Length: 178
Image 1 (cartoon, rainbow, N blue to C red):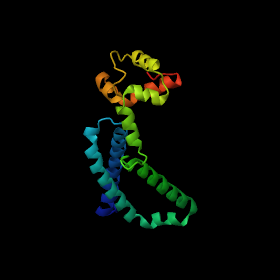
Image 2 (image 1 turned 45 degrees about the horizontal axis):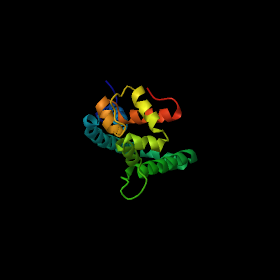
Image 3 (image 1 turned 45 degrees about the vertical axis):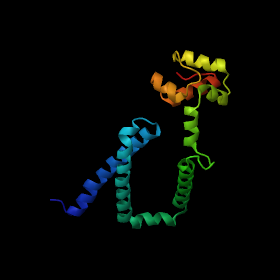
Image 4 (image 1 turned 135 degrees about the horizontal axis):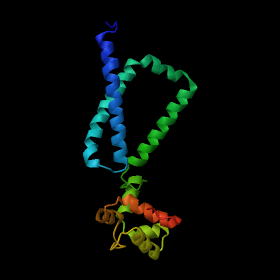
């Protein structure tokens, strides 16, 4: 018989594997959300599992506070902590804005590129109208109107709008994406 208590077994044999699985699920669903794949299926689950993961992290931090607080006494972990806080704050600041206040918003910028007519997108990329038509033809997007948006064309041809924008950018660079 084991000398470990039921409480220790629960902590090590239940909480640790559950935390690992929740971490894996959040990682996979987070990547899916980032690439806009299956958002309708995973968004709410990702959010709920995120709360479970936060609870597990808080429990872990509380349980191992003495060891964790030792990091604050050494310079390299302090630098890593400060840098990760700065990077996290920067990412949140840049991605949390909706662009309505005149501030920079990567999400608003990408949405604008996806919804603008392809002729305007090509012009922003420095791609002449003839090259745009060539990309549409070379990619096999027959009948695609050059005044359609990447989002509209993507829905019509079964492609992600970002793949269409990548093909345009590739054409500008001299190597259209396939």
